[in-house]
Amino acid sequence: MAEISRTLFIACGALAREFLAVSRANGWDAQISITCLPAIWHNRPEKIPEGVRRKIRANRGKFARIFVLYGDCGTGGLLDRVLEEEGVERIDGPHCYQWFAGTADFEKLMDEEPGTFFLTDYMVRHFDRLIWQGLGLDRHPDLRDAYFGNYRKLVYLAQVEEPKLAAKAEAAAERLKLEYVYRRTGYGELAEFIKGKVA
Image (tube, rainbow, N blue to C red; front, top):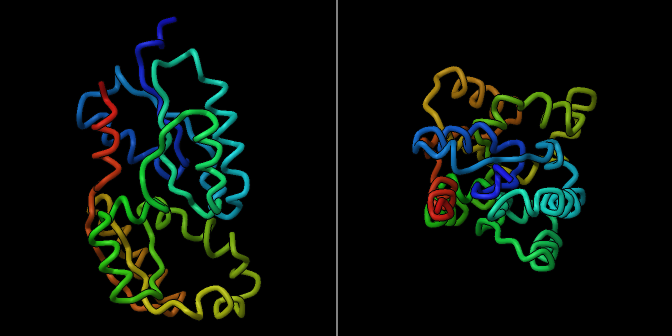
């Protein structure tokens, strides 16, 4: 098979653009591939473990190696159980916010303010669909306190420097009535993990 020497990464759809940017910047397009599950599953994490399992089984034998670009992402350890059963490794950490910020910086941010809501480039681009409409805030704005009443800050972890995205993130913080903080992170530990798996 032509693909057998390549490495496959199974990822959340929210990471596709970042994966491709890292791959192209390092000239890895001929060595690695990505297949994604729907990013909207952030709102339905119970779908993630078996979705990942199906992707693993559908691609075994087509690729030399398979890795997973998901944190636990709210699966309560069920994703790790699936990966143990399937013999597949994932990137460390509970979610992509930690990878982009870097573990030490993320922990510092959480120590400073546990009530922090994070956005990535993907989440800023799709804020209305994923957050505002996805959580029903467009129809029931009174739900804002139920969802975000315990949050104090919105931290935008920016992978790319793009003024329009920063302005959109700041507007999102205003809508959610949260203090806005901007942090340019780049691709952080996501890029390091991918690099470590390219043979």
